[in-house]
Length: 146
Image (cartoon, rainbow, N blue to C red):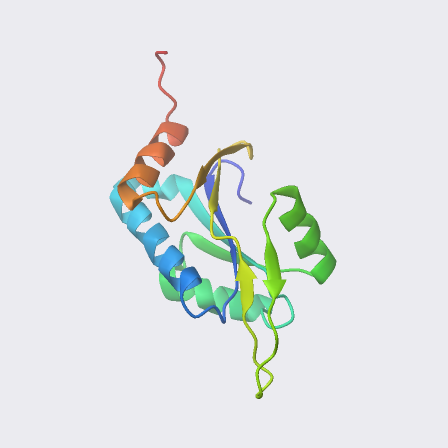
């Protein structure tokens, strides 16, 4: 379903208090900067907290940012662990508080895949939305000259 689109893949969780919503907001800025080219881009928010992040919770979370371009993905602990290991994503559940709540410490990079599903770039929180948009434009329409 994502072939044919540049994919910006971010690992996080819906109960994240700060980094995840900030990163999703930055990715919305990237889409805005892309203008009409945003139609060629999908944002995939992959849960690192499958116990709380049901498919419904994930879709509600991403829809609050952009229902057209963003998708929330979750799975079993094993599936998430396997995918995270493949892309060297670090995450760890922290101690539960008195009410049973917890946070998940996790990497915050955004993986950028081309329309053929090949990993091309890694964006960090130090990369501006302008810089990420420029990189995505180059992936959407590779220059015909070298």
